[in-house]
Amino acid sequence: MEELKNSVYWNIWGDCCKLHKHFYGVKENDDAAWSNLMKEAGSIRNKYKGLPEGEFAEKMVLLVSSEIDEKAKVDREKATTK
Image 1 (cartoon, one colour):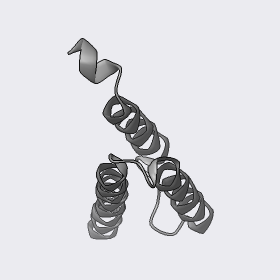
Image 2: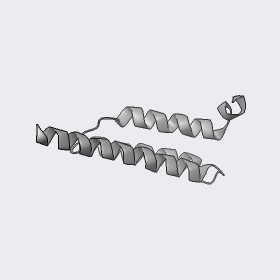
Image 3: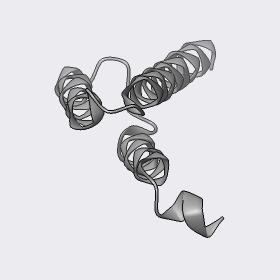
């Protein structure tokens, strides 16, 4: 476990966790937040681009972004059915 904590993978997990925490619950129509999400996601992707772990970082960023998008859609649907 200690080896993982000292790895690039650990840093990627941390960066993606912060991204998720920061944007979790964003509203689907909050254009400024979505723009910031894309900017921060791009920064994470670029941070690890060219490294052996770069593909993992890209996949994690896409996964987190997709999860945030799905949450926003579900929240919108819940709001319209009330």
